[in-house]
Length: 267
Image 1 (cartoon, one colour):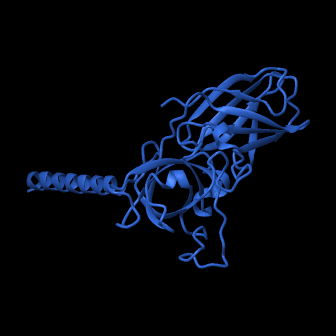
Image 2: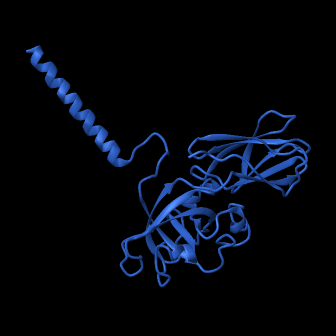
Image 3: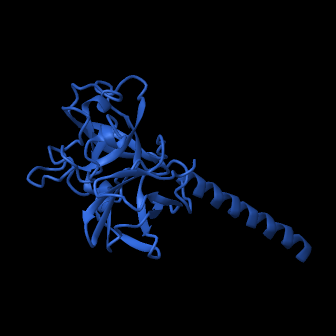
């Protein structure tokens, strides 16, 4: 009797094991953020104007300034607060496609990879489905006109889209722009590969150990230290937990306002 029961229990175990594995795979459950995520639903609009500045103009909520100079250009978007996450999404890459609208979406629903470079502010004076597109908890993308034209017609007002997080493919290394004054040191980090996000930063001078930096705003990171007159190294951790160290990126005679190029996350 026991010899019959054992194979039966073993078969039952494998049945539930493989059934659970199939459900997990179908749901896209993973312990890491490596690889592209599942498609999610959102909406998108566009803003007319040049693509040399951020969607909202000036430095934008991420601090990137002129997008042609920081390497982001036309394919940039402002994102609603549900996606912005207090600046942690700055530099992150999203693949977008227009869906479920035969009059507004381009044939075949082509997709486009864009970079989050600004914040789309909410307007709680308007309902979320009529003008308050960026109201929390809506997930919304405010695109440049040229980027919008890659997925939809400009006769559209607000379009339904699907999006997913993808890898950012950048040319060259990460860029570190020195700002601040005296004992307040700040660095703007741009052209970040991997998922494009920066989760943590450390800086090291020739006369200091590694100093953790805090996010001041957007992609500007700061610490209270006088680092003048020292070559500087940076350790940058991406949103996916990958870390890379750029040693002696800035020479000892660096000046505020200068930009230096460091290492890049490997594919």
